[in-house]
Amino acid sequence: MPKIVDHDKKREEFLLASREVIAEEGLNAATLRRVSAQAGCTTGSLTRYFSDRNTLVIETLRLAHFAAASRMRVAANKATSDYDRLEQVLLESLPLNDKRLQEWRVWLAFWGATNGEPELLTENETRYKEWQTVLATLLEPLLSSKSDIEQEAYNLRALIDGYGLGIALSGSNTRRLKEAQKRCKLQLMAYLQRFKN
Image (cartoon, rainbow, N blue to C red; front, side, top):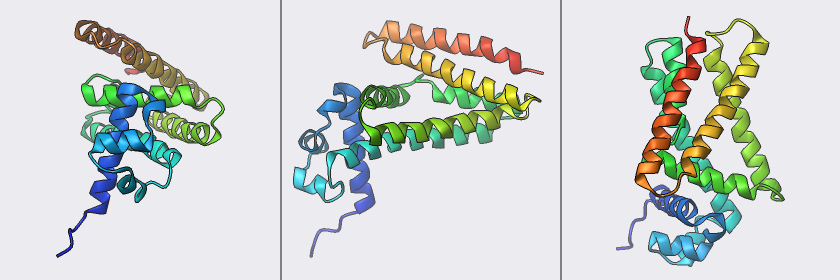
């Protein structure tokens, strides 16, 4: 009897392996050979799911993005007020645990590679537009002016990027990482006080 393969699961295994390689070794390390080795499979097996490296790395970026978006939706749905919804989504966006830290290191690798790579640049721009829209939607019930909403969404996006980068670049020293996470969380909470009614 032939072996039954769950193709969706196998595809996700390759994407998770790619995410690990990119987060730990950088985007250049994410070759088809390296990712297939990380997944414990042959390169031929990997190319059944991803025709080339570019397709694999873009899908890896999307995996990180959609995983974060899914967690943010769950956090938003649990919120008890408009302010709480904004706070919870922003906290969920920061690399405050190992999984989110890995996602941020993937995003960081992509941001560094977008220069001169039109496909990566387009993907990154798409994700940023989506994030700007999410932030504007969260701010709508808290601010009356449309121009204030757009400006504050931009400010929050920049703030989260800065905090996230600060944490992601804090290195592998656990004490330094925890301190950066704590400091960024406290600073974000202080900034968000302006949206409390």
